[in-house]
Image 1 (cartoon, rainbow over the protein chains, first blue to last red):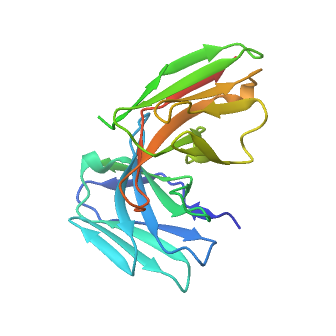
Image 2: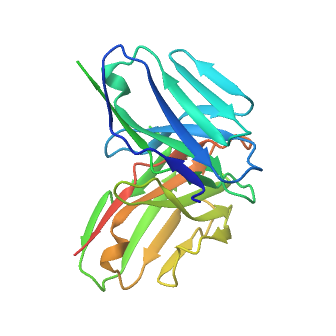
Length: 111
Length: 114
């Protein structure tokens, strides 16, 4: 099993729609999780951190299910500017801020 | 502005040539990371430095790859005898404050090996 697995998409949704991405991870000892956003041909940037059961920031909600070892990202009222690749990220063992990135889920928000 | 400058931004080279990438954090940061990203994949960890000490290297970092951070500030990543499979975006990152898991990436150096 890969350390982090995501559906690569693309997810094509109309503006205003609600969309959810799931991510599964293999290391049951992981304590913290992250969603990064990556625009086309740009560097990844932190979107949200998830340390307990979940986190909410405006239109974005991240949830964690430790029993099933998956993390989700929900985007409500999607905007054209939300079009990007969303990377699920789990720390590598050994600390030091080393991160394992999923392959990313591509989102395209259309008019 | 991510606080991390990388150059060159693009490099096209022929197979077998050596290439070197440089990463300059704008301010002092203890921890500096190198990642590689190929098309359709997420970034993959290569190596990281705590000040000038290289603390860990991924098994992805073959003996053709060498990274240095001589004064604990800028870092270089050299690839010797490049192969077509080395074509990728090479990303440098610095850690955010504390152990939050946040990395600030530079814009990357894109390598194309012909």
